Length: 347
Image (cartoon, rainbow, N blue to C red; front, side, top):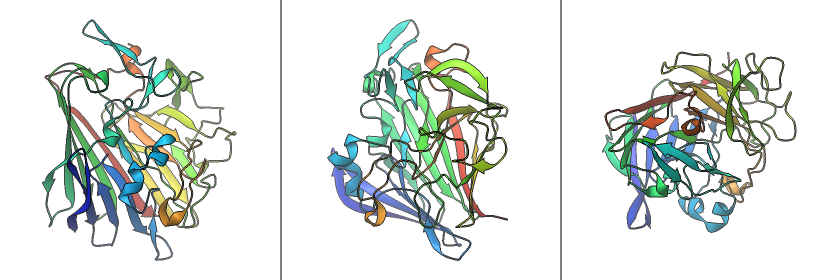
């Protein structure tokens, strides 16, 4: 096992951007930037003995901050916060106080607002060259994106010998505030990339959350049975989809807070399986309809349906739906979440 921290030579708002490289004895390699806690590379050995990168991204760090990329910004590989997914109308109340956030998509606030945690430089606070982990920390000040409270967030990445990339989150606040964190990795398990419709997908969820036309959750729980959203048994991603693909929150069949298997994706050409485990109640499955990225890795352009995302999180828009488990973090509480991306060979 090894960990390396390398300067990119770039500074954002006076803060240095580093690349952190995790490698296990099997040669599995993960590269993370402390800007946006971006997972830039996740390289594993496929069934043919070839090294294969299973996440979308860029060859150079500078491309993540290129204005052209940010115009149709897909959050490639980044952490999402202070609040993942959509807050309807950008409004919520905490402690009798009303808050209005910037609307950055349709009639909602998406993924934390105009400049979320995905575009911040995080401090590297725990780094061990002989270990397998790195911990990043970010302090979101009271009023940032108009959220209340000073929030300190820690995110630890650990690469194990079993080809598990473990993301462990913690957060504390000095005032009640909405918190819903996730990671927006774009995965493709095919050795040649391209459309993910032939990937086999399973999601361990009997129900999903109804959404309005702007993709905001309404509060209604619906069964997947008899619908195109039924992934309780493995099937090709493209088997039942329409021109929109999938962009849906699934309610996992689990006890809230327990670490359990949420999703499994299998790709025949590489022989790879990606299993996602989480303590979270929701897996948001997105097949990247709106992906439009120029000059990705190897100069390749990424287009719609070139990737899938499994965004583990609390219930979206829960700040406006009392029936949902609360997403309000109190000063005396500790927010915790664990999500594991495990890569294995098909058997």
